[in-house]
Length: 434
Image (cartoon, rainbow, N blue to C red; front, side, top):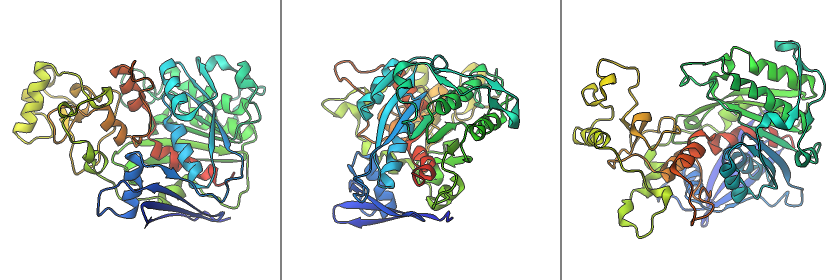
């Protein structure tokens, strides 16, 4: 078995071509070149992708049937988008069979982008019957998890890849109250039960890196359940957006599993991190073409506007720009911050020539993180936040222009999403086994 994996890029006419080389062979995918003049081929490929360039898959395996996916806790579909790009990179296509979430509008966005067959507007826990016996490494499902939804049950045994991003707030270091003990953490096991109940050939689960510190030991429990359920190959690890050439320092923990125990290409997450490694890219690379002032454009939608700032926040932003600062002095902060605090990024300004810090669901509010544009006296727009998260302009967050989503919905979909760039990398070891 060979675990070598390497990406290479080259300009070919009016396209940029990416070639993925692995033991199972090489596959190439092209994108219309929309990049800045003088860009390296690798930078040009991803910049063109972000700007909405059409991606052209390798035609070698065009006759193969599409890989069928289910996405649980899907949000707007960042993980599906990443898996779709991973499938393209290995010469395959991805068909979105079902999406599961309590957010009905998010499900509509999922279908608008992927043509998803079944939208299940439901709590995931109500869709599967399961029970665990034993603890930790001795954990087993007491009986095979049973899919309870009629539409989803019709897909049992027909799913190639199950994707899941169960709520991570309970694991996050941003949660100071119930960190590591939040009952939502058990939804991690619900996600495993769904994947096993569907008899999916492969599983991708993502969460914050802190999930491994959960008090209930959900990660090791999940691994034991998967192994006992016939997933012969299991891997896990952390991937960082900026280590893969992204413009954000976001990290996510991935747990992946496959029923295929032996494969020609035995690529692990650590091999992906090594083979796809690129230097971090800065904010200017990601959003530099979006610098025009929104008020100068004749028609600006919700993706390219920001809410009006309060007088206090407008004054704080003005202070940063007048003094060329990126961290707001305590003297300019709310009274609760003036005697010391542990939130230096709050009310902070981003750097043009550095990657962004992690984009959160508060990116339209200066008081909820470092979200102030480096060159404009405002917070970043949803369009800019989506680019930083590695969503391309071709992704439709607005399904109906006549009834646009709320800003709160956009913040949730974009801020909570796993960056598609990370989903692309995490799914590759599994795609190479199919």
